Length: 352
Image (cartoon, rainbow, N blue to C red; front, side, top):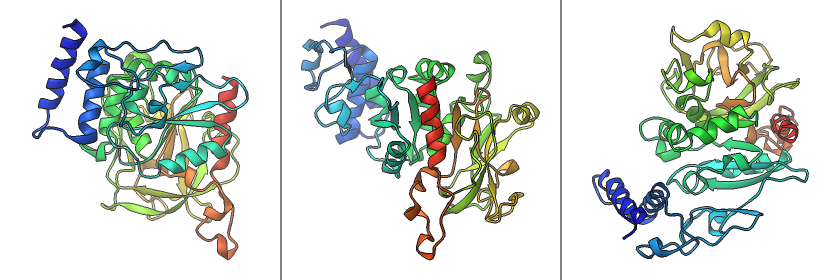
């Protein structure tokens, strides 16, 4: 028995024993895949156990990137045996990250529609199969949805994935200046993994929780349309946006709060408040409900890192791309589309 196979069996046993009842079905298969990744066994499309240990993945062609897959994996790009290399002809290639063992995230299709409309090719994949392939993409999207069913808190387990399995890849991607956007649950994951608000390299992995997204001030889930004002001119996503945005929210933990240790003055001077909640007439919300739906300090709806290439926001700007998506478009109301925000990201990705 090879060392890799011994490690595989040990890791798979440890992962299985971590649950009170034996994992079954799709969950068990993802644990199997994760154990194979950690132990160094990378299978082909026909990955099966125990025969997996004797299989050697076929060499990848220059235009494909290897992934770990198995026949029942719902990810179409994983079943296809690889991912296309980053685009070099016009459209940036965006990675839409879906999370862990949750096969379909709420609103995931909306993110893909918004990405396609913004001028990018979107490749959707789960966290485990893509592993360390972030560097091969031009733009990274962490969409909304209840990753891992929001166990242990909204976005917490996805944040642990980012801060452990993908820590080098994600920070290398961010440091390279490539655009990153986290929407709703994706924003929560970016904050709780320490990627946002963003600090110096030696500080940002401490995760002292000086800023977080916590329960809405009203104590319940909010599902409504809101109005947003693009603020930051440092953030590449909101730069030069002149029109206010109207879009829906759908969250229970979107209340952005900081501790007294948080460097608020430098946060403000760095122009890191990307979007704020406003009244429908354009006046500041001043923390008034429901214009500010969750009680966030300074009416914060979205923030960016000091470099300006990473944006996290709670509202779903991708759900108002077309005129007919406006809730009162049949009454002649229009405007406030979030499309230009995504176009900014794509335009920037072409320049990096």
